[in-house]
Amino acid sequence: MFCSQCGVASLESDVFCGACGFKHEQPIKNKPKPVSIVKSTKLDISWVFKSIGIFLLTFMVVYLVAGFMLLVLIEKYRIDIDKTLFAVLFSTCNVFVFLIGGFITGYLSPGVTLKEPAIAVAVLATLSNLVTLNIAVSLIVWIFPYYIAYFGAQYGEKLQQARRV
Image (cartoon, rainbow, N blue to C red; front, side, top):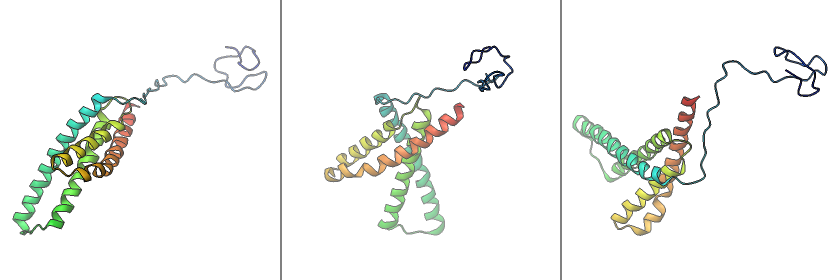
């Protein structure tokens, strides 16, 4: 091995060059190869559709669990549900659907896919509002779910990267 600074021969075990004192870069034994995470700037349309499926499944699971819990509470404690409580429960369930669906998509998708689950939520929110003929609200109502899904996808990606290392 030769010093990259002055060119003098040195042993591989030497940390510093004996002639000029330059610190050699030591090859570390058993160093794991770095995992290359590809951050794509292109939109992967297939993951938008996969995200829509993941969100629909998450929607069904969250609402089944919430409905069962609500049924138990109503039977056991005789709770009367008014419109305000229903709106709070509905909004809370939706936040969980967006967060969990974004997280699952971010975790399962290869590479870094953050935009795809957020766009999928925007599409779903817009379609659901168009079906209910609330066209004016459909342009506004997807913004909040978009950011919740994006936030969930970020944490899914972080877990995915942590498990690769």
